[in-house]
Image (cartoon, rainbow, N blue to C red; front, side, top):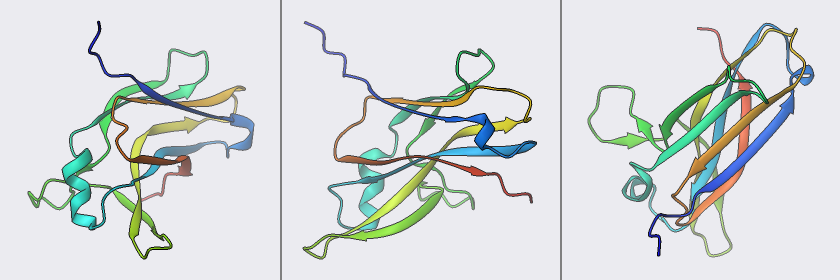
Length: 144
């Protein structure tokens, strides 16, 4: 009998011809934790849960493979733990319980515009408790 947890996998793809050429895109996993009520409680459930990700051209070995976390380091040097990089929206159910959509950055992709194919994004994790996934979102990286 094997005690290894089952892997939960999500795949998304989009034709590179639909993306603007000479543009860097960032892929995000958009999700929320179904059984927390207080926003501060989110960190106690998924703080250290790893996500194995791939972002790159399907069939290519040139993609970005790495491990990220549902909640990423807080950026201002505060040691309050892990918090999502972006809060994307508030959801309220019929009982008045509120949930916050969260985004976790998966990786970047630069679309030169001369490659034909599909941008593939793969997310693998063993964490599933109360996880509600809206999807994978890609957005142009903002210039600083």
